[in-house]
Length: 398
Ligand SMILES: Cc1cc2nc3c(=O)[nH]c(=O)nc-3n(C[C@H](O)[C@H](O)[C@H](O)COP(=O)(O)OP(=O)(O)OC[C@H]3O[C@@H](n4cnc5c(N)ncnc54)[C@H](O)[C@@H]3O)c2cc1C
Image (cartoon, rainbow, N blue to C red):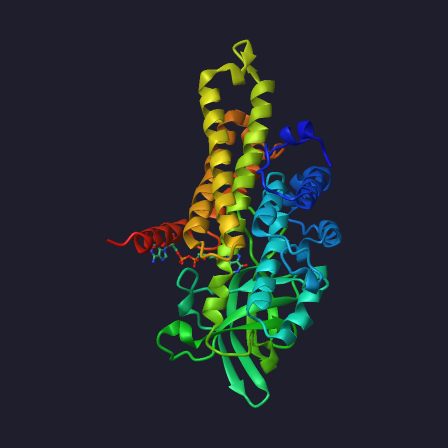
């Protein structure tokens, strides 16, 4: 384990208290790994938009594909607080690899929370090792925020279900094996969510990744369109074995997903701050480091304050999540604030780097391209504000 001096010099800064020694050791291991393995290759892989196969193998070894899966199924069983810290550490260096295990863990959480005993015993050990990897397929070309408008249909027949439709923007779509796919099992149901069901689908006849999508940032990780044409699955693939629960199962996983996106935003904000603090002391204008100019100091102060505030909101949401309490307000606030902090800090870092910010030889342009995704994923920030306000009113009736 690193000593306190080493820890205080990291991009992320001080750690939150109340962690066990084991948690701290895991977080420190991940931080060292990110600095050693990710930092040297991030720029090259990002610019080439190349899938980091060797990094995936290392993430398997580190147990990241089972980070939040219960130990009885072979996972590390980490709580949301520790998991969020890991995500921040990695994102402060390079955010994209987080998506490779996080989307996978959202799928695993759906099985762990809602699956039958057979489904848990069959799938979770394979997910925990990374032997089978995947993600979650909710969004369609015509339905993102309004998930109840999806058109992918699963029709029951004597042998199971037949799935037809398409999904888009699905993380790990090309390299993943298995996906939790949201469908309509009763397209006429009212309210609409009562006709929705979640299935575990693995690639094969009738289920293909049609196209890897080109993106502004979040490179190296595959976002893809998935196409279902008379794809057959057995009834044992219906998560929880009861139709009509898919919407709740899918959105129930989003609280953890939001804490995770918040942690990614905070990580980017911290990474941008770290780069800016260093650069501001190296770069001289008018006979002194730019860090000595008050205009730059004001930026650094605001950036650092955003990072610390984001950390506290994430910790609050994660602790509440770990107690099993409803935390959509807290997770929403953390996601909203931390993702905006990522955008604001990366933009401020661009300003501090001046012309060099525009160079692909520095990392800040990557932070700047990666950050806006955090304002969109796991519920847009417009929706987070609506969720926060609704909860606020519900918790404070007249
Ligand atoms: C790189 C990337 C990876 C992704 N990975 C996945 C994945 O793995 N799995 C998956 O299922 N999806 C994934 N998504 C999809 C993502 O979750 C959606 O893009 C997101 O939910 C928003 O949906 P939309 O793009 O259809 O926007 P829309 O729903 O069309 O929204 C457009 C705008 O309208 C606003 N808006 C919509 N409804 C309201 C309202 N009621 N009130 C106020 N404003 C509103 C939104 O906030 C937004 O500003 C990914 C997206 C990207 C870009």
